[in-house]
Length: 453
Image (tube, rainbow, N blue to C red; front, side):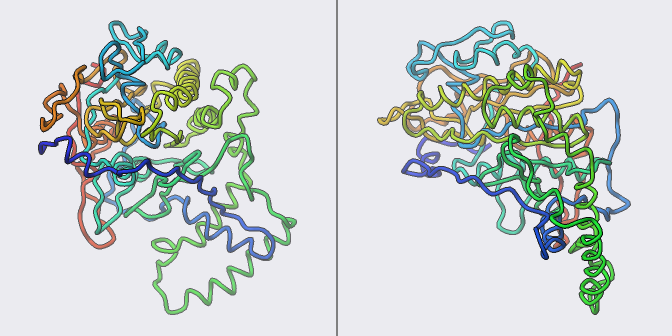
């Protein structure tokens, strides 16, 4: 890994506080009125399963492997010092106190008291490194396992899991809850593997019921098929629908979803009040509860986003509020998965695109720091009660390579390779991109010490 210094890191980051992210509208796949069919086609194209796969595809079904991934995405870059890697009573530690966790000999921030009770179930990585210090590029890297490339768009890890595994459910297998500026995408694997985006689970998913009666809806769809589709297919590729537009397929799957009882997985109101309360009164907490219900239904990957970690000013104050939300939700998620005996079948990853600087700036904030940040992993075959890596409790020295102060650094590529390997996926296999370029799923190295023996 090439050396980095503080000046090179600073050059990657903005000189001003980063702007807040805007909540993206949830993608609509059924439009109202006369445009019903068109809405079905446009929206479901984003979430339809890929039908045509090469016979050489190496999908694996192994019942001893995890079945689902829940990615708790902390957008903005949470500080490792205020979350999973505190250095209390040190200059870099700020006002944070260390709190003994259920993982013997391991302290986490006192802002996460409930999370401290479930750390014995985690593999805690304290030495994550990235070569990207800009939000957009770093988010792309963390979600895909690849640095941005102007020649193609890489798929997010949830898209890769859906591509490489089988599923037989009537709702999307890849879902993003509370997605903001850079949602998970299918990349070169196709938009059908983009994450289906929904907002606060308190609100119903829009456009799931037809605004007209069933007979009228069916007449509209029949007309679309016999007239519009027939004319559209003239002079075009024979396999246009299965490999390109997926319009017919999208319509069929959208209708199946509209009529499916599996939609109830989104309805957290069906849970007992005591369970809902466990996750905290926040949209993120409700998203985590929805994630439990969705993976229980058979969804392959759920990403739940908590924005607001970009603390260039008032770092401690913002982390107090954000950690309060995260603490209840993460504790509720792990506790409920374990109670339902689902944690062995589910991998939970909690982290952001990078960490924050050990030094505190003049605005009482911390800036971007892609070296020695933390990611917590729970469930699946990952070890329970394991800590990997260590960061220095002292301030970095100007001009010094910060990597020299980290024990056992882990690249984002290694993280992705290890997660894919935990699902039994051959990440070294090469996939043919649309332009004919063969590309491996990951070029990282598996961290075998993270797995249970």
